[in-house]
Length: 316
Image (cartoon, rainbow, N blue to C red):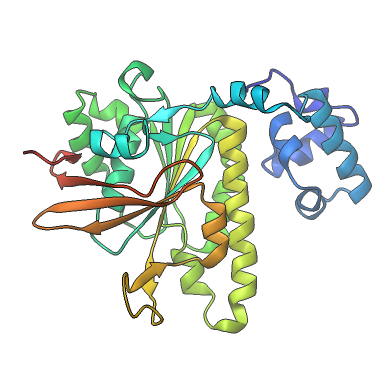
């Protein structure tokens, strides 16, 4: 839910404190209300007592409180669904990609993860009656695989003006994990100014895997990754937007039967993602998507294909 409050409406926040919060990427009362006290202490420089006081005041202002399950059900009705542009995948997801959630695409190279990310940057711009969210996209590219030419191809399929579609995709190249985290921390202003309804990170784990090598660095890596994921979850919840992240796979030497691969990122990413979808190659040019972790979806599969027009249903 959107509120028309400014940070200075929170009891205890003056001009100087409001400026510190904005410089730290906390630009709204909603973001302040869901930001951990420790984060305010570390990045804003507040005392723990002052940070706790401000968080409590922000929560009181926008009425974050206990609620009945029936009230929460009404709140859930604000969740939007973004079409993938492929009926089989939309049916798999029971309507499309959800806002207020992180949807993770897992799979080896060439299964269509990046293609689907490109397509969602187009479909998010569709009007709501056509399955879109009538908004823009923020695309954070960690592997150098974003291609605006591909956006143009897909936009043509949906009958949209290519230049206008490109203007509604905000692109950021993340060169390391620190840069990636910083982009997300600074995203709040972009979200409001550009009506962003979709954040894509392709891929979420790449820099973390490349920079934190060896078991002795694993704990630090997972702590930073955990903080990063929770920042994404806060943005998704506060601004009612969808978050799509792609994830790599690694060999699972313990798997004598079944899938010899497992998602990278360990339990931190497994717990942080709301919905997890495994993509794999099928026969000929077909691709198969399977939901393997979800609070509401059954473990079912969908078949799709990647063409020059984008991600599409398989033609009979």
